[in-house]
Image 1 (cartoon, helix red, strand yellow):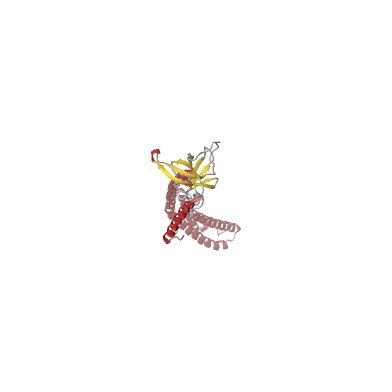
Image 2: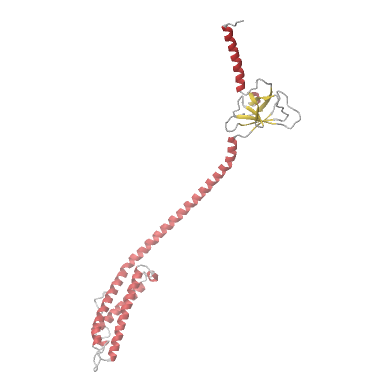
Length: 322
């Protein structure tokens, strides 16, 4: 019996529909060739669980999620229908744990067997539980870190405030040092004129002593008596000692002018200045009297009365004393 072309096309269409039906269910994970048991689980939140998601027992795929319904009369809880292979026997107390599907994403349901000796029957209800997701775990772990970070920020703020107060103190200290430096500089400026005058007078006095020493040398050469020679030698030694004293005094005044040593701290002591000024006046009078009346100090004649001259001469106007 020959089939017409129309009959052949119809049979081909039916066969294709059957293949499409079975292929669709196979791709969804349904076992179309064996009978399955239905179990129900109620969750308050399924976290993105969808139909055809796998049901695992110790990591083995033993079923799939068949259907999900919203129970509005039960505070919008969700009723999940599970298809489990008929060879899997579930005792009472078995838990359906909703968890993440791993790195590939999605959700899975892990079956945890109960310890009862009574087995569940078809269309019974399992105990539903949800595993904490990655976001919840991260939030739980991150909360102490956030708390410590807040404490650290507060401590850093307190330290920064302390540095701010320290900076204010350092600025005040720098201003005080600046004022002290200005005061010292003012003192040096005020006393510089006096030091310059004293140095100038010492220079002039030293030049006067040099001229006096030159005048004494011919007198020493003409001395005939031993006593006169000894007196002249003692006078020359005295003048040399005076020169050395003046040189030492000049170095001391240079140190005082630069602010070194204890003497630099006595710059404002007017008593020291007046005493030095008085000493220079006395030395000036002595040298002037010596040049005008040398016989008072060096006797050249063997007979006759020594002309001592006046005991004090007028002040030499070549040296200015202030």
